[in-house]
Length: 335
Image (tube, one colour):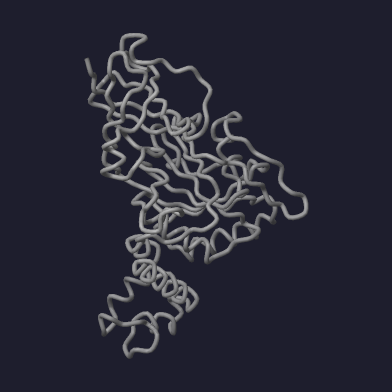
């Protein structure tokens, strides 16, 4: 007899998800971890199906062939449990509410979903070495997911408090009031009180940033214990080292979950037109007031964007960044 249930994929081992069964078939769960595991799982024929039991699962052949997709962190899935079968079958990946997508490095034309069904993306960057162009690029990609987006400036203890506050205000002014900008330090408790709305019970956040910016350290502090491996900071430059090699959902002391993404070296733009509009909403609002609908904001008469730059409302550097990212988006779309 086959039983259809919704479950929670808690780990991936050799591309075989370990699923925690939810006894209530009207509910579904999330992919919790993608890395090797050694726990002993229970096969469906060993015991009666019950809430919380763990079963090994694999993707249905038709699912892989027709959609070319596999379950990823955050995915909600429907699976079939068959009597006398050692593996459950993932029949369906349910619709995603949000998704972190990039171009598959191995398949030029196909998207790669790195995480899904999260509420919040937090971009981490060290305050001692802020690359504005990287932050703007990351902001576009994060906004494209459809989730709420915030920025966290880490290693705040490495600069004087007045400099830390000045940098926070500078970045806040750059990105606009739609995005929260906060400070964090792994060693200074003054910078460990984060906005209360960030990690509410049942919420799921993605931590996005380059390797060594402090994602694992932040996760451990929020969890109240060591749940993510960290390495020592190099004394010569204050940089952390790459630690996370897999995507995983970690439950925090508050009851929230975080996805500690591996450091992504190349943040390419993949169909991120909506993200560009959200990240540069100030530019696009001004563009709506230009005389010509196809205004390039470079030389046309009665350009509202250029007028805002002349009046000091908008910076020339920000417009250049917007135009550069927009050009990159169009070029990628033409590949």
